[in-house]
Length: 275
Image 1: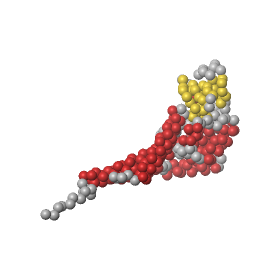
Image 2: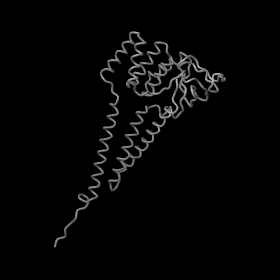
Image 3: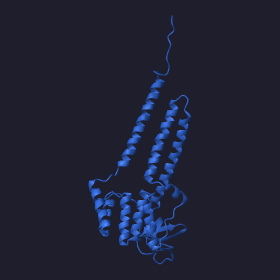
Image 4: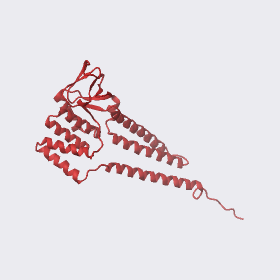
């Protein structure tokens, strides 16, 4: 009697398990692509917002700075505060001589587009106009604010999926390929970098930058009007908030610190849309 040969691998439970895992990886890849695509389209302005943006640009070009500022402010308030809107709003403020508010808008534009050379150049011009010092950043902040929080989030998300996809593929193969191991290592490094970038930007939410909006403010040793002044902060000065007490906020710039009234400054935070 002829022996019957049994073929292994193709139709056994091990092969079915591998097929299911491969299908799951494919689904995850499609989900990742859809997530990144949706994030890229989120917040796209409608026709009305585009018309208003153009109207504000015309007002600026014709020297109607208060109207241009009002239109840009309204766009930002309604959730269309892109880097371009904040940058142009800063220019409108600067045209009115409102240097503190111009610096505030330039720093908000920086948070959204940290590599924009125009925003950086205009910020420096505004700071020189009042003699205010440039923002003080740590070495880590200088490195990781080279990309925006949104960009670091995309890096972290993509590298997370890439890492697990490569690890699953390595598990599916009886002898993992060297390029899978190398790819997983690169994805792991990218994931760590993305998380560090997000953590760095999170620090600007925990201890936000504050911009002095009024004439030179004296930073005091204690949160009371009679305290000794330690530091003079010209209009447009960018400092970091460390703690607050009533109407006072303790701010720092490098090794210098002091208390100023909260009403004299504004945080460089991107506010949620309001109706």
